[in-house]
Length: 347
Image (cartoon, rainbow, N blue to C red; front, side, top):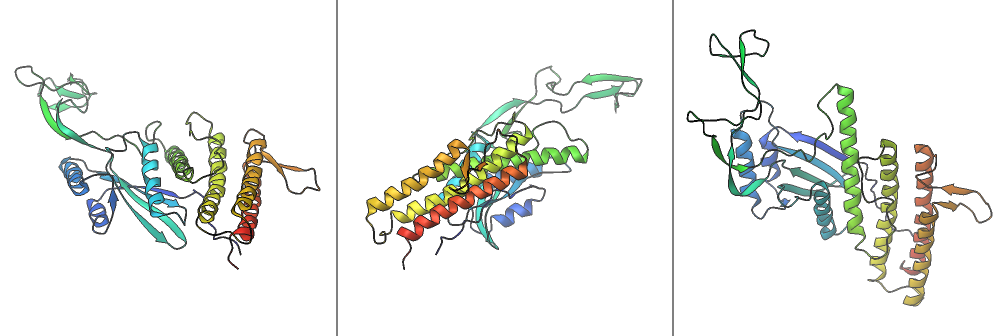
């Protein structure tokens, strides 16, 4: 009898802009969690601010659906959300976000609504600035376009507005400008292919953050294998980022299973053996997996000299590397299951 498989590969993160306030109000009708002490007050303030803005294509917030492993405790699920938002921004405590846990089909997900603005602890006084360059026609005094031959450049975008006395016009603000935590990070909108590439890059970036957040939770659970690279460096080439992501996904699968075995081991009496013997065998099994990750290769059979490579620096295609990593996961699963059946399965 083998243990229940953890259905998780870190491949699913869905991101959508929220253009309608009713999506948020419907979300909070049922039980939800938030990082805010008074989430309802924060939500009302942020929604009211967006309603006040005269903008045709309003974006109230960002919606994320993130796949997480099945079998985690409630506290571990909450910790994943916290660590994920920490990876998104060190200012995660002031970013208002709401979340729920849902089970859909065979999957376990976190639904997150995050706002790109934050509420100031104290109202701030700021100078009003022009949002665009302005031109006026010198004959009519009306606003006009830059290519008008009679146009006079009245002000530049970013210039401070002044009253009749020449003093800066100031306003009291309670909500910050938007900071695009979950948007494209490089360049302006181009053609559809460019936007698609940037969106793919963003999703890969968020997947990397999820892997790090999940790993941080797992590492509180006794012995775990180390990830190849905890720092998701956006200066890496696309190929290197994808290889690191795929490698870390497989390592996290193994770590989740190791964590469950250790948790079960410390809560259940071992079968027909001493606790010390079971622990010694577990450590032997664990460090055999560690050696594979350190050597970045393993043998399929003791009788054959052929070694399977899982190095990210070798010239392996994506398919070759993924196939080799999947084979490593199968070998790790078999080692863990063998130990589980020997010491923990109740006959």
